[in-house]
Structures are given as structure tokens and as C-alpha cells.
Amino acid sequence: MTRTDVPSGAPDAPTGPSGLRGLRELAARHALLPLRIFLGVTFVYAGLDKLTDSAFLRATGSGSIGELMNGVRDTSAVPALVDLALKAPVGFAVALAIGELLVGLGVLAGLLTRIASVGGALISLSLWLTVSWAVTPYYYGNDLIYLLAWTPLVLAGAPYLSLDSLIRSRRSRRTA
Image (cartoon, rainbow, N blue to C red):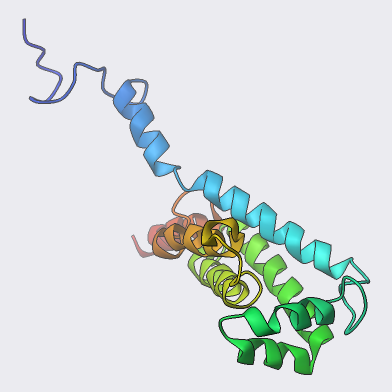
């Protein structure tokens, strides 16, 4: 007996929203949501952690941004980036922390997600080229992994469960 409700070549699975195909479509549609949540929470936490760490927000001393940058300067791929940060280490630390916070909040809310993701990728790239460049083997350095993790969000944005999708749907209703 041949089923007529299943296209030829398709597995014998129920169709529709309650069937296996519906679950697969739902999973595919929301596949980037766990990545958005992870990266968003991580970057919000990283930004808040920096902004609330008085030792980090100093030019010198144990645990300071200045100590960190001086420690990685000679092993970074782009020492000029470190030198630039060392001209105003506290300002750089505050800018980095606020950048991480804004990127994280943007990705969590799904607001300007592609732009926020580009920001996250650029932060991760700069940290990879400076702070974690000398980590061996390379896969122990988390900044490279973060850089690559931002890529799907740069490409796809947040098409579902986001302010971007809400804005897009309201615009399409107005023009229809």
C-alpha cells in the first residue's frame, strides 16, 4: 500500500505542524536561538564583569588591563593594536566592556542582530590577534572559537523570536 499524503522519496512520517516534518522545520527555524542566547549572555557577563572589576579598570597593577596588555604585547599577532590600547588602557577597557555589553544585549534581544554580531566578531577577532594569539595549541584559545561562532549570526541575523523579526513583520503589514 502506498501512502498518497507523503511526497515520493519522503520518509513515511506524518506531515504538518504536529508531525516529524513539522518538528524538523521548527528546529531548523530556531537553530540559531541557542547560539544567540549563549553568545548574548556570555558577552553581557563579560562586559559587566569588566565594568565592575576595579582592579581591571586600572592602567597598572595586578589584574589590570594595563598589566594584561603589557603581558601579551610581545606575543600578539598585531602588537600595534596592543600599543594603541596601551595609550589609554582604562578608556580602552571601558570601551571594550561597553562594546561587549551592547553586543550581548543586541543579540539577546535580536535587535540589529547582524550589526551586533559583526561587533562581536570584531571584538573576538581583536582579542584573538592580541590576547590569545600565542595560545598553543590554537584550539585552546577561546577567542578564535567565538569569532567563528559569530559567523552564522552575521550571515542569518535573528529571523525568529527577535525584535528584528517583529519590526520586519510590522513593516510588511504596513506595506501590504
